[in-house]
Image (tube, rainbow, N blue to C red; front, side, top):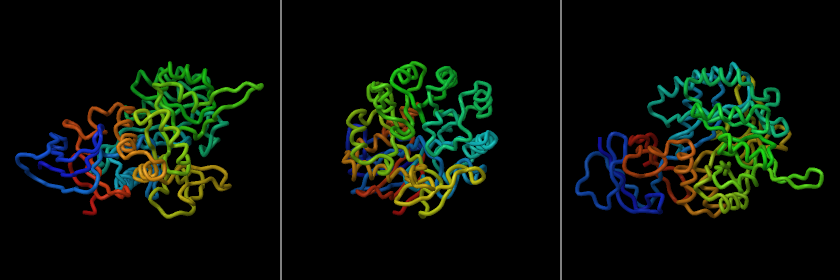
Length: 392
């Protein structure tokens, strides 16, 4: 059925626009000021924003479910939780854990991707670990952290049957640069995460296809002194590398608003992807929770809007949803709504190579739309032109 969405606050890459979004068969067909005729369903969103669907590159779960829990229901329920907060495409993310848990997740992801017809698009799998630097383990379980093993990661990729989209790795580890080349040849994005790399390693990593930094500032050092000499850490190196993309957890806790403003001023909205890095407690009441699978995950405490390790000295993943990220960027960091939305839509779409069909409101794109008010409270979510969530 044809669809028309009317609004005076449609968010385009060039700015706010007033008019109609016309769609049919799940795709946007035209943007018109005053259509000659209207057929099919009509949504009047005058006075509120209409945005491209949000794209979350890094989420471990939500709604009480972790993607590592081990069944299709957990994957779909977590995805649906995020959909209600505006996410129309997401990349389920693992943690370092038992290899058999990973294989089980990959099998169930493939089934969920085939059967989740009324939810968000599952863009692909993001493997976070286990090839990390122990010094920068953060909330990752140190029992499972190791150096890259070509036989092991080759089997994992084969088991994934083409659904692995990205792998976060510490590039300073033995064999990590060669792994970057191996991944790139198979269409998998190598990303720098939980790393102790200095500038020279960062430059080498980029040459080996590492073009994205996983949760900037988290699980990595800044400037350090060695024998009196200062060395750039991962964040400063990423700033100097114009073509290096970064993702930031913009929940207002992992990075304070002033640091979010700094990242924005240096890298700009075309190189920043906002991510939730959310764990199972996203969308749930505060209290005790588990990061990772129910069987082998780590106990955490959710308080003050963020998950913490039991000693409360370190964060253990966020409980944010995509709407909160935008709210923080706009209301606390002072970023304009158009750029904030770009970092949740067009930029992550480009990073993951899906910008030909997602991330912007343009003719020919998938009709994935989010409607929200001035406080970034979600009013409706459309996926492929069909309303999947609405309070209208």
